Length: 175
Image 1 (cartoon, rainbow, N blue to C red):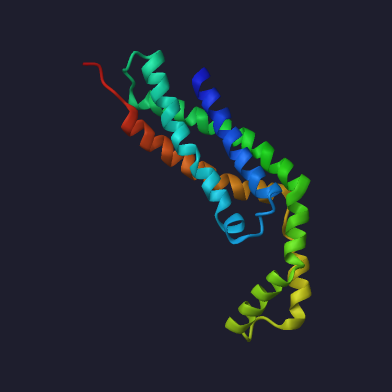
Image 2 (image 1 turned 30 degrees about the vertical axis):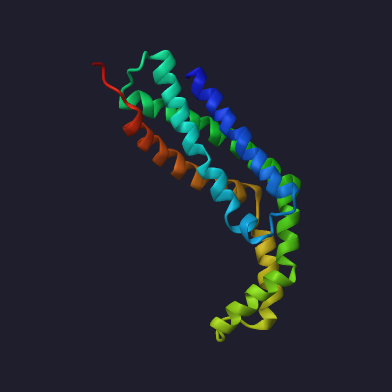
């Protein structure tokens, strides 16, 4: 494992965790941005770290020459470190705060409004007397494993895609 890739993977995790803690502890998790976009923004943060790691390895360790395969290996190392550390963080976040926040959300008037909108769109399928069962099903359906998996799939998608793009743009042949 390349030391620079490890450092950049840990640096990405520090930035992503700081951003997520700002959203969580700042009380922005149930806002439109916090609920819908904050996770995807934290995942997109990985792309600059992939390029930085590969270019630093090319520049300082490999004398300016790097194959696409080596750039991909460095980038995937950053992604692997990020997946492991962010999995641990997502689990801790769920146990610490997210379970409580999700329960509060599903019992709130905001979620009740969502159910009422769905009822208006599908009048024959959704009845008002089904709302308590739907709410309890939503609350019982959230688990640490589900939450962590849900948050890691975008990280893997952007990580693999970013690694491929990085390997195409960072490779340099000897002159």
